[in-house]
Image 1 (tube, helix red, strand yellow):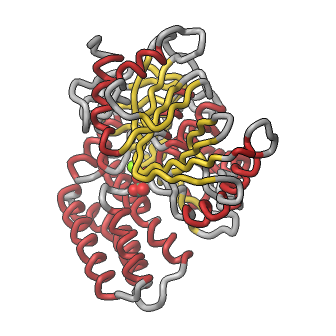
Image 2 (cartoon, protein in one colour; image 1 turned 30 degrees about the horizontal axis):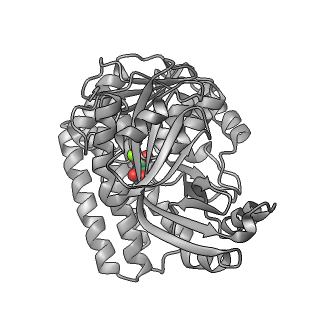
Length: 440
Ligand code: ASP
Ligand code: MG
């Protein structure tokens, strides 16, 4: 059994939904198909919630109407046959009725979660009607009946395993299973979600709990590229990555895979394959627990970084200083991405600056604090085990003309990261590709 996840753009129009159905129908081996909302839908649902929080009912209604128009148009393209179209329309209609039911009263957090869940519910409803019209026996596994998180937000793996297995075993005749990505229930039983982009995470959790043969993440780019194609010409897909390399890349900015997606697959050793719906026979990228040695695989950048330096004479020969610094970030529930230390100071980076002022106030008790905003982490990933000579030198050589704020190497066997100003990002990405991949 395989898990196949199709993202928002892969189901972004009637044509694309049909194409996904074609791909799904190619191997009817009781695979599990995870669908995201049609592209743009979750953004519209967020917009509707924002209008409702502000009490702007006409704004919300207008967005609901526009979204509904898009779905109705999709249905008429997808289902020329009136009977099937009506079936699909009644499922879609339930979602729009629910959205409209929230227009009467002030929105609560629970209501917002329910609104956000509608996109994935509509995708699976449409796909099921389409597969039925093609005489395929598909069975819907409602994510809200098995996907659950604990009070710390982590997936409740025993619950998910037992509930999902039971649902699958109920239908021995099913040729394919459909389920919603992203949505889940929380520990109170309320409708919730796995955060934006969370459908990859759903696929990985399902693959892990069912011990799947493979988790396939279908997008519309040919695997993970060795640099960001939006900024660098001539990038190429990486054929194989270690789980650790993929985790670093996903976390540090490679948009193709959700960062949390790697962990469940890695823990259960389920290979993840990134595939392209536009070119289904292309090999894509395989992520597993092995990868070619002695090579640099890829470069990624993460924007919106703030670097905070704490300098103190008291750090010299003292113990407990770093503990106090880290504790400050913990108290503000802000996670640290990168660290560089010297005997008299430490610099850390964060990507969530919502508590920055309060953090800086607290850190001032321990030393002089300097903040650099609008920075970027550039992460070079590959077999960077420290005995391999020369890779870190080549990275720094490439960046010879660019001011580097901070460097981190040796934290894992898989990456070297540097922090530069946002304005130098593109130059840094290009210089690294030239030096590391293009032999310049
Ligand atoms: N539909 C959700 C989002 O747009 C989840 C996903 O696409 O993975 O964030
Ligand atoms: Mg997505």
